[in-house]
Length: 340
Image (cartoon, rainbow, N blue to C red):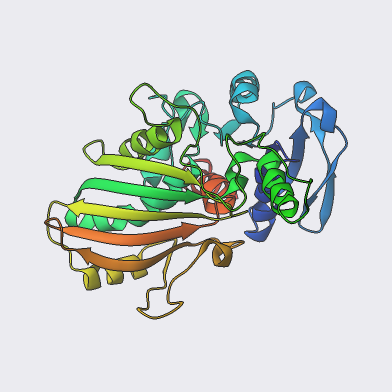
């Protein structure tokens, strides 16, 4: 016996990936519904070898459905998630709306699966920010061994994290660079993204950080350990898919780079590719379509006591969004619902 599953936002980048991953991982689905806004009503989306027509989320009855994967943004989530939850359908939400709610668990299954037990307070589970998700997968096994005191992270985030309009803008600007008079002015981003990098993701806050940077701090503390100090600089780069992060870690106890490499090789969800030679590391273009979080460039930081550096790369549409949501659904099924 399987589950009755809803994917809300099925026509978007993340929603389509959710459908793909549910099929790829053979999630036990008895029935599936693809939801979208009224303007996308009837749009066809793929689920394995099946084609689904989207239904209007505003008219959908969530009663009798087990799990709803939401990829519709905070505003729509605020409207429809309580409706689904009240009807008895567990919502796994990809927006930022519920991530900081103390009554809603924020889950990365490789890191804090036990926290999923708290879903019953609101019948809602939050999926973390894409940049946070891959980082905590890398940090958790090291934290268990040597206790992390402080993290300094610089991110190199692809445009797909900002949606389809951002992908189109990078594509159009890149083409326009080669055709005089066809230059494309920034609309989605604050400055030109083609052949450029922008140290600004989400809105600025009073202390000078951006909300994306604040998310990484707050979410790491909630998912892993509130005692960990985190400082982040988040940068948008002209890459279509795949986020990269340069992570500097200060531990309470010494951790040798060779031991760290061995620990990461054995950790769930991680693939270590770390050869000290040309090309002996993973870049964003190589991680696209993969489930893993890739770790490279593991090395001691001699400028501080108990310091370590590493390079972390992952497909942000997968581990950073859709894959993690499906893994949450799997964890929910295995630990709580136990139907499939």
